[in-house]
Image 1 (tube, rainbow, N blue to C red):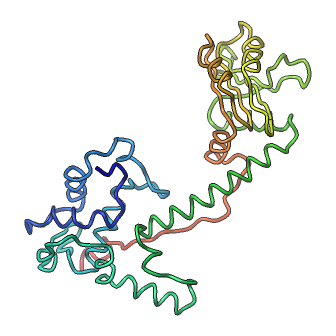
Image 2 (image 1 turned 90 degrees about the vertical axis):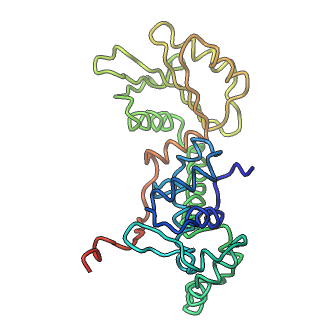
Image 3 (image 1 turned 180 degrees about the horizontal axis):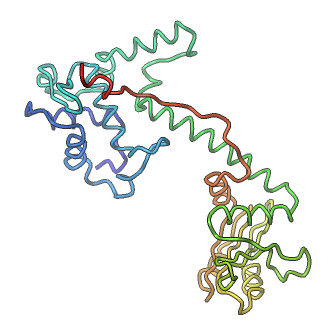
Length: 297
């Protein structure tokens, strides 16, 4: 059994099967039936996974499958928001492949036109196999995101250690953890900052930030951090640009205090999410047909 989220073309036959009784059904009902009948084995996390634009991924894949089937003449839209199978779709008794659907849909002709206009270096059937247009967009965004995070981590490893401590406090404030207090640059007892979760400072979070290049945070670092917290608070966040070794992870896990460990990869994930140390370079619009505009025609 395939435990991965189906590619868009893997929804072709499920869609046709659900519509094979010839009835007209609403798009949302179609999505629900396809998922219930063919992909109910997926985990809740997979069923809730989203595209970069915020749409439920499996619904997006079904929608693109539906779009290709319509272009190929296998289904049609008798009225707004509803779908019905065509005679061609009813006659499709064998497994419908992506190659056949794409050839029928005219998508390759579109890409050929783009090539002739100079909008693409080389587009072939192999380039679009397994990837809907939304998948290609998401892959592009993911690649850019990975490169930005890699550059961000390298930058963090090179900045002044004191400024790194301030970066962490700024990040935690943007995450909604209240006002922060920078501790003295010397003799701070292993505490680099304090977050006051309430205005009176009755509930505190102690922060330790270690800007390491290669060295891992070890068990003794966590032990010293716990000692520095004394009896003032039982909450701490230990952040590093590198990694935590197994001893450090176990020490934090078994401590009586609540200690959150944030390694370099998790750190840049959070900075990327809350726009700390990065900026938006460009915004792209994705447009779709406005059915309401044509409703009264």
